[in-house]
Structures are given as structure tokens and as C-alpha cells.
Amino acid sequence: MARTISRWVLTGMALAWAATASAQVVNPRTLEFIASVDHDVTQSGQALVTTYEARWYATGATAPLSVTFLGKPTPEPTSRRIIVDVAATILAIPIGTGYVCRVAAIGPGGEGVSDPSAPFGVAVRSPAGPTNAVLRNP
Image (cartoon, rainbow, N blue to C red; front, side, top):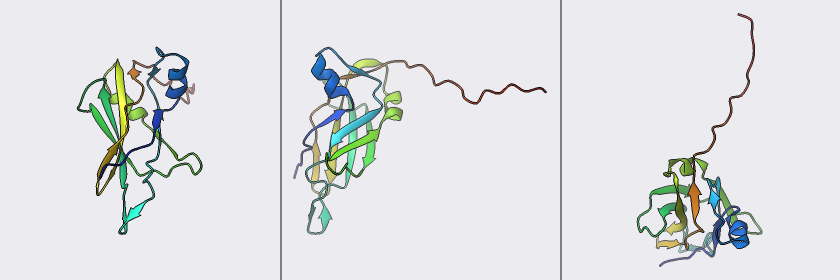
């Protein structure tokens, strides 16, 4: 039986998207979504949701470029939001624009998949600077 995730967004994307249709998040670091309504539901002693996956697609593609196993993070108590760090996953996606993400709630009865996120892009980013520079005499 398919279950649905009520809604989700890449962090910051909803506000940017609402401000202007042409705005696009580039190199997102976190993924934020609302937990499935079945996140804590059990049936005959089995959890209906056992794990989540983030599936990364080129816009319009039917097969994901990458899949990130998210486990079953605990949602924030009042908002039911789940926030996960996806920076490492984004680095593995080819540079370009027009990508979307879908989150799947997976359980013994099947899966429910979210609608696609607003489009995002991946660009070459500046490297982090070195740390702890020390000058010494030999």
C-alpha cells in the first residue's frame, strides 16, 4: 500500500522559490522534509515506515542519478520536520542545473514517494581553507 509524504523542501528553497520563480538553490547542504503521516504508525506490530531515501534526478528523468539512504531520523516534535545533511551527496552530482530530489518513505508494505522538490543546481564551489597555520624555526 503506497503512503505519501505530506510535503518537503530543500532547506531555504521554499522561501527562495516563493520570492521569485527563477530563483534556484545552488549546492544545497541540507534536505528538509515533513515526516510521513505514517512515520510512527504500526500495524500488527510492524512499523509502516522503516526508512527514508533521498532520490536525486535530472529534471524529467525517471531513473535517479543517485540515492541517499537516510535511515529513519527522528522528526522535530512540533513541526514533524526531518533535516539531514546532504552536502556529501551533492558533491557527487555532476555540475549543472535542473536537478530535483524526491524523498521515499519505505516500509514492509511498499513505499510512498514525495513530489519533486523545486529545481536546484550544482556548481563548482570554493575549497575550504586550510587551518592551524603555524610558523616555526627549524
